[in-house]
Structures are given as C-alpha cells and as structure tokens.
Length: 101
Image (cartoon, rainbow, N blue to C red; front, side, top):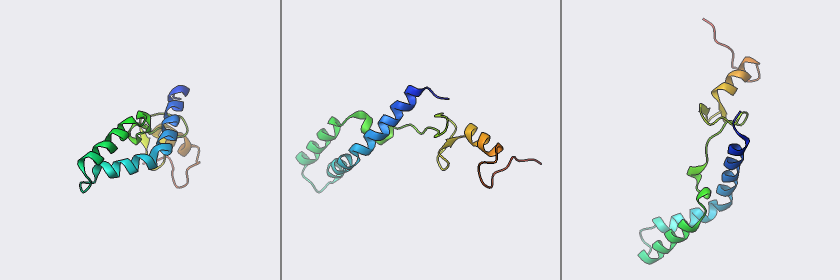
C-alpha cells in the first residue's frame, strides 16, 4: 500500500488538471498558432507559465486504483501487476485464470 499522502497529492493534481484543462488548451492553441502575431503568442505563453505547475497533465502519476502502487501499472486495467494477480487468483476478473502447463 502506498503512502496516503502520496495518493492524496496525486488526487489533488488530477483535480487541478481537470480544473485548468480548458484554460490550458485555449492558451496552448494561441501559443502554437503560427498565423497569430508574435506578441500575442508570447503573451499567451506568459499566461500559460503563470498557471500552477500541478495543473499540467504530465505531473499526474499513474497509480493503481486498489493499492496506490505507482510501478508495474497496467493502463488498460488501471491497476498494478500485484493487485491484478491477487484479483485473478480470487477469480474476480472474468476470463483470467492462473496459468498451468
């Protein structure tokens, strides 16, 4: 189990990303548009830099929904390899069984 504080920090980052997503997308579109004047693009870039760092999507860490583990994470299932193994051994994941040969 991951530390509760690390999980909460990550959840706070997710909320901030959601909150600032539209503003960030609008400013990025202006800053990357080559047809706009240089001054307008530069002003958009400065406003983008004033946004909180934790509102950037790249700062969110993929963590297991069950245990909070940051490593060995399967994106498709949104859980770590250890949680996946435990749930599949209990028979809680449809179509997944313990392999034997």
